[in-house]
Length: 321
Image (cartoon, rainbow, N blue to C red; front, side, top):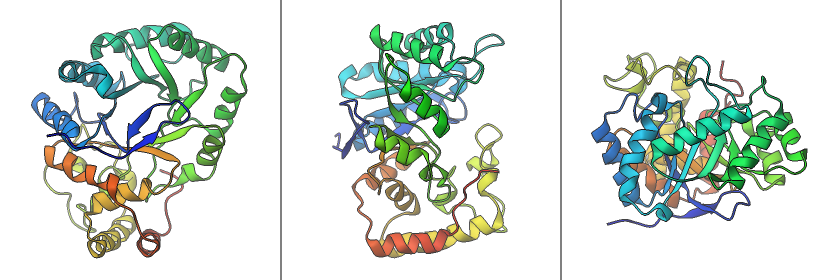
């Protein structure tokens, strides 16, 4: 039986998305088996999650293919589907030139078994392609009906401004930055700039690669089977595995216990505390993870709890390296 989940506007697109989104980076098609992918996707629908975020490069198309098969069982208008392009798909296929935008989106649509995506995102800024060309390519795929709206991930504020200033091109409705209670750099420039221009945040790694679950203890080896022990899924976690960071996270775990939430739920509720954020993207390898994290969408944090989180985790990282 499916539940409903609180929804939020996706910028000024007119689309509303579930406050929790299911992502597929480092999981589906990479480190998580096909049957687990299906189990987690169906759990998402059961929990009211109807926003699914992927990218062509995840598993070199494997994540998109998996969802193309699984989502075919659901009416196309019952969920919001987002994908991305930029990173290399072959020795010659990469970037955001106009030909690449068309080629990569067409390939994504084929793998996803759909005629359109609701959101097509620039996975990074392409310094090798003039911004005007990238925006013209994005405008064309929207005009052709292959993408309803467009967004970007990890663009610097100056490039966002330049894109917004270009005349006669499609306007971005979303930004996808890394953002968590441990990493708050986007608050400085990206969040306010986007808020002024009707652009919502869809944040990735809101659990800081799982570190905010509290499963990694200072001075102890990572739990067997965790992301930190996986060569496929653990490449990006080291930035949060310093002893002082893990000690702060243990203080955060105690705040979660006192508030009556799991650490994951508290971390997700924290990023959702601001209307700047339309959705927090979670990754999951088990059904139980999806169901637990989905509950965060309904949590309202008190001023006392927010202050306790600040005290536990201060100072937040402003750099990843």
